[in-house]
Image 1 (cartoon, rainbow, N blue to C red):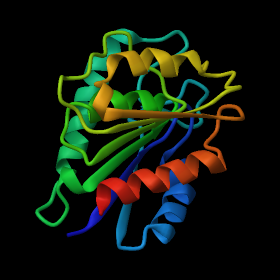
Image 2 (tube, one colour):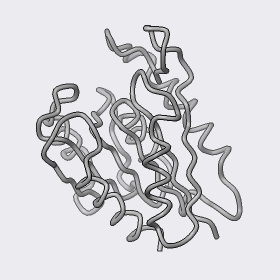
Image 3 (spheres, helix red, strand yellow):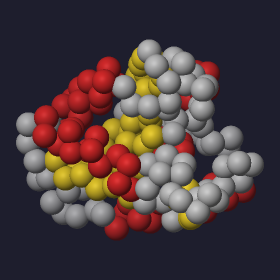
Length: 187
């Protein structure tokens, strides 16, 4: 069986944005870890980068169809050799919000949201994959209060969080927590 890590980039980035993180995690995983970085379907309004849905102003009406489309893309990745139960979904910022929304509906090994936020209508099912929330204490893009809002919606025995020093990025301390989550849920 192959382990897999699926990456979802943030607003205005492209699928290339998280590939160095994926490669770093794959090198330290200790067994084969396939890394797939998905690209958001919409052009960012600046003309550079991509978005999962419009964000400024937030187009919350577009979220359900964006999540449905992402789930369909994820389900196309399923193989006998690598089922979702051997896959971790990791998203950053807007990708973190998408990872929570789509990932908690599917039988992933784990879901990791880095600097993510909850969609207003998001309610995870009663039984969802283990979730790791990572956030910078000084994040000036997605305030750290988002962690508390997500935390309150997740099942108590299926959640963990770590708030680290710094802003809107994935810090070294967060990378250590991601490695730990991969070891725990993919071994």
